[in-house]
Image (cartoon, rainbow, N blue to C red; front, side):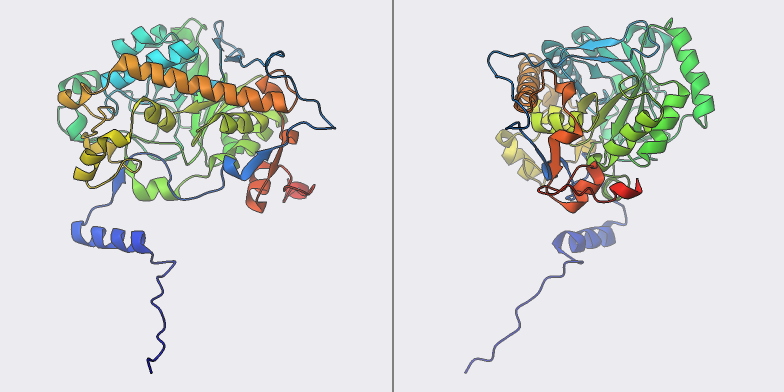
Amino acid sequence: MTKPLTPPQPSATFDDMTMAEIRRAAATGIYDIRGGGAKRKVPHFDDLVVLGASMSRYPLEGYRERCDTDVVLGDRFAEKPLHLKIPITIAGMSFGSLSGPAKEALGRGATLAGTSTTTGDGGMTDEERGHSQTLVYQLLPSRYGMNPRDLRRADAIEVVIGQGAKPGGGGMLLGQKISPRVAAMRTLPEGIDQRSACRHPDWTGPDDLAIKIAELREITDWQKPIFIKVGASRPYYDTALSVKAGADVVVLDGMQGGTAATQSVFIENVGIPTLAAIRPAVQALRDLGMHRKVQLVVSGGIRSGADVAKALALGADAVSIGSAALVAIGDNDPKWEAEYNALGTTAGAYDDWHEGRDPAGITTQDPELMKRLDPVAAGRKLANYLKVMTMEAQTIARACGHNHVHNLEPEDLCALTIEAAAMAGVPLAGTNWIPGADRS
């Protein structure tokens, strides 16, 4: 008679990924670096559902009744706020982390869709300015490539305090991607790893930042909107202090937001999910009487029109996409599967963007790889994707009886989990219970 055996039981704490990382660290003595945003499962927009109209509300007819999507960003102080056709913008991604053709494709796609794109660290390229009808110029702690001429050539300025993948952390661009052109734009030596600062050199708080913003307004003759971008960590206070410092727009980036490169342990363990960040940021704006006067742009894991509609319903004025835009123009495309395999990964999981060997020609400075990306065709793909996202958001807004996507509201949502209900401040499905509502 065979004796029954206890089957092997893998540890939930020491799972395969954890043990592989321990072995990798033990063998190399260095921490893991990668791109992208948090890959761990956290509460997200999928944990919310939309309450379509029935008896208590009346839906709009999709083919006969309008549902508008336009948005104005930055009309608090600036003489020339941004007027966008859709509430979806392209997030900042630097030339250096991305190739020149990739930056051109983002500009082309955004322009076709009637929205804006953003420079990222390292300065403004002529390709991006030339193909972006509306371009937001990022001012980062590194000051790489920063100059008054480009400030004036931009349509808005985004002061980056932090980003969702690494709030409190600085930038990282490894030597493989410091090409002669990248080095010249950043005033750096070629081929040498670059680490940029985690905080701005000339201010230490909101009072100093108010002075810096006044300088930027003087340089640009009070015409350009000033955005402040923060990584989601303490969104209530960060939003309130951004308003105090004089921001026209607050950009709030959750932990699912991507980065070109940083420590993996940072990406997965610092910051809070996008879903958890929106409600406190909106509350800060309401407490200051500035909701809809200082616009809120939310980013970090936005993938579809449903995500857009839910973010707007929670109080955002617009959203921003980065990783999804890269996928739209060809990042992680299965047609490069054999080459991803050669790099020890697979399509859909490739995140070693810092190594500069991207088969898709997007996150690289290799001249031969860059040739693989056709910026015209890639730009059209991005425009198509933005069009689909917008139509999806319109479909949901109409189903809720709204003639503008900005009329979506928290009452149009409920949550499928207690965690999502508490974070978003909407009722758990089938109940009128909002966990923690009596304590906020």
